Each structure stands twice: as structure tokens, then as C-alpha cells.
Image 1 (cartoon, rainbow, N blue to C red):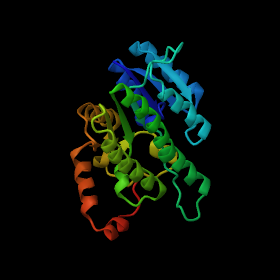
Image 2 (cartoon, helix red, strand yellow):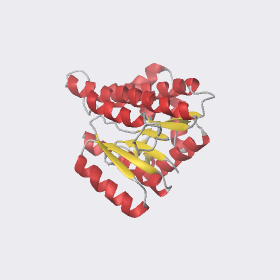
Image 3 (cartoon, one colour):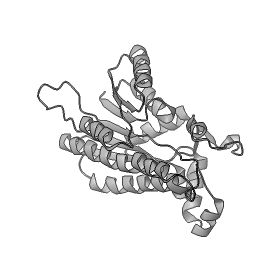
Length: 257
């Protein structure tokens, strides 16, 4: 069915993307920071789904690591003595919340967030669409968030960039056979919030989405060429409200992660 590269592939939505793509018979290139965890997930997927799985251990806040992943994305399949297949779907999923206020917080954490969720997304997308447009087919799926419409500090700002960047990318891609989709979910039941040390006790159960449903909807939207994928009617309604509210009202709502 083709080859998909997923960043942040060993946990949360990234892991769910890997499993659903493997079940759909896609070969995979899995990118995450920890080699041991990558090898474990790759072995499980190979055994269960019977697809080919490459692993790339990379910290996407490190320029040299990003360059290695970009080099893999640039493979066209025409390189001599290179058995690697070109990537037909890039899922830019890696990201994290800093769980701190910008004022008084460690600036290194903020810059690392920007490197992972903005700089790496731009560089990897550029490498992917270069070879995809030359072949006349492919897709990019960038994971943002409903937080892109809020005032949740660096995280929300990064996701707002990803959303706007993806919309602009679709204009550049017209007529090329390549598509771009941005996924904007709400709260999803993964370890994302726990890892960030965020308190989610006040979030009502109705506010949560499950990862399999979010990923299935996102992949269906990619197949249909949808530009902005917002799973669930309640978050579609919430997003519409955030777009029409006066910005002072949005700022008064506070942080969203």
C-alpha cells in the first residue's frame, strides 16, 4: 500500500497512527527518541501486521537528527543501490507541552518545543513534498490541535503555526497530486498530559476523545483530501465558536492544552 513515516511514533497518537497504518498494510518508518522503545514497537508491529518497519532514532530538537530524517524523506526510489522505498505519507506528530508559564519558565524548554513542533515540521515537510511532487502523489498529515485557536502559550502558538502552515501548503500543492491535512483534535486520552505534568481533573468526561477514533478520522480525511480535520461534532462546534468569539473573550478563557 505504500510507506508512511510517523514521528513521535512510540506513544500516544503516533503509536496509534503506526498501528492503524500497519493494519492497512502500509510499510512504516518510525521516528522517536528512544532506540529501545522503537525496536520494541517495530518488532510488535512486524509480528502482528507482517509489514516492513524501519526505525530512525532521532530527537527532533537536534538539527543533525532532523537532517537525518529529512534525508530519509527525500528518497525517491531512484537512488542507485538503495532499497529504501519512497515515503508516500508523512505524519508530523511529534510534540509536547511545556507545562510552565512562559514568564519565569525555562526558555530552553520553550525553544525546544518550537524546534520540535515548528522547525522540524517545516524541514521534514519540505523534504517530503519535494520527492512527492516529483512522483505526482503523496500526502502530508500535520498534527496540530484545537489549542491553535486559543491562547495556551508556546504550545498553542506552535500549533497555530502548524495549522496556518498546512493551509498555505495546500495552495502550493494544487495540481501536484500531493495533499496536506492538519489534524486539530481536542483532549485525547493518551499519556500526553501526564507526561507534561498537566492537571486534567477538571476536564469533564464528555470532553475526551479516544485515540483510535481520532486517528481513524484523520486518516479518512487524508484519503478524502480534507484540509482541516477536526474529530467529533463537539470539537467542530467548539472550534467554530473560538473562531467567532472576540479575541479578548478567547484570552479570558485562558490556557488550553
